[in-house]
Image (tube, rainbow, N blue to C red; front, side, top):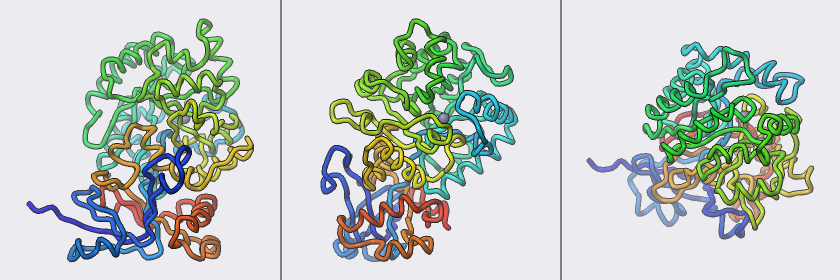
Length: 440
Ligand SMILES: [Zn+2]
């Protein structure tokens, strides 16, 4: 059967390398009037309209004049069950968990409820231009099934896992070390590499897991080296103190995970706000990733992430952006960038428009070891992409008089303005494997 081709005409922007370490001309590809040709939901060709349109004449073209097509955004840390308790007032991490999070997660014992929230959550991701995410479910296996079923229905590339927690939480939310191991194993055998889905072994954090449970999480990673490890790390100062009390023989927070065999090249640690320099170096050496979650870190008063340390030339750490719903206050990666920029400013550091967009796309894909499949428009990549309207609001229309200029040098300003002033209204359309999944 001949392959059905389709094409999109617009301005295109994507990354082929990391603009933190290479020049913009080396790392960025910008095509002011481009044509992207897709075959079977994957990129077949991308170039200027002028150069490509003769070769592909006669195939259907969807045109988005004066709009910018980007790879879909990648959210490297979030919690679908916390959607309904976003913006819960007044507490920092440990109190916030007990007062708001744990009672809410208790509701996910009910599979139908989990399905309803998973559906809402995924629709909200698509409205915000996020096409892939690394997601916490709850301790209940049925909450993982519900999430993967809804993701599968939408054909999304998603990573998720069952929370493992066997202490320091209400009884109704606790598993045991062995049950957590068995249930996680059954779930990963059921879902990992099913279509576009992947499994993450997901101990909540060191405070809610015994050493026995962390060791069994490490055993799962040994038995299934292809799965992810997803947890929280060094978010809040009181949390770091409590971890030191609970694990008196450890050399630090990261060392607790290291001793259980949880620090590897498919490990993603959310936050890392309180990390010491030696811990950044260890993460760099292990090729582990950090999810930088600025709206959450500010909302919970956790602190200011050290972006320059994570992206240092000597000890680079794989880095992505996380919304961390429901401690995070926005589903939008644009709003997440907005706050990331301000966190950097408060530390006397800079985050350029293109560096920020890299973190939200190819940087996130690298953090999740998915850069062979998504993150840019290299030939053969899966065509998950978004159409950005840089004039979506009256203010943006006034600010971005020329939304898609002819040169990269002129693009930095409208992109920066859109990152800072934009939100879900800026996402005109979201495509999954070349199919329209959401439109404003
Ligand atoms: Zn989190």
